[in-house]
Image 1: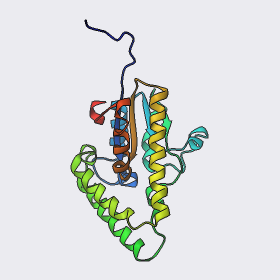
Image 2: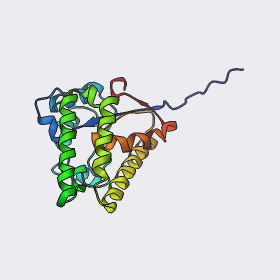
Image 3: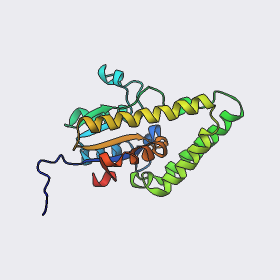
Image 4: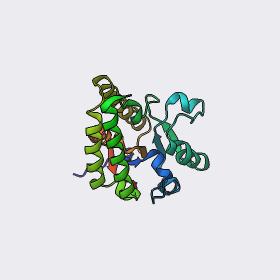
Length: 209
C-alpha cells in the first residue's frame, strides 16, 4: 500500500550568501554590483539580512553594513523580495575587537590577512566555497581568540540569536525560498547552527536556490 501525503507543505529551501562589507567597493569581481545581481537573479521569496527590527521598522539603514545599505536595500526596493531583519543588535564583527594594546595590533594583522584572502578569492563563488571558508574560519578563530571573554560570549550569543530569528522566520512562513546574506565572518558560527536544524529546511548553495 502506498500512502500519499496530500496537501503536504513544501519544504523550505535555504541558502547562505557570505558578504564582505567595505571590500565590495574594491576592484574585485565580487563588488556591490555583483552582489546586487546575485540577489536579483536568485530572487528569493525572503531575504534575511543583518539589520535589526528597529532599524527596519524606521527604514533606517544608516547603521547597517555597507552591503545592506548599498546593495541589498536597493534590490528590495525594486523587486518583490521581502526583507526579513534578523540581526539581534547593531554590533558588527569589528565592534568586538580590542581597543588598544598588542592584542589590537595583532587583530589588525589578522584583519589584513583576511582582506588579502578575500581579494585573492575575488569572486562570489570562491568566497562562498570550501577553500576560502576554511581560510576564513581559521583567521576568524585566531582573531576571536584575542577578544576578551565577555566579547567572545556576546558575539557567540548574537550569532545564536540571529539563527533563532532565521528559524522563526522559516517556521512562520514555511515552504519559501530563503536567502540569508551575512558577513563571511559569521559563517563558521551560523552554518553548524543551521545544519543542526536541517529537518526544518533543505540547505542548498545560493546558485541552486
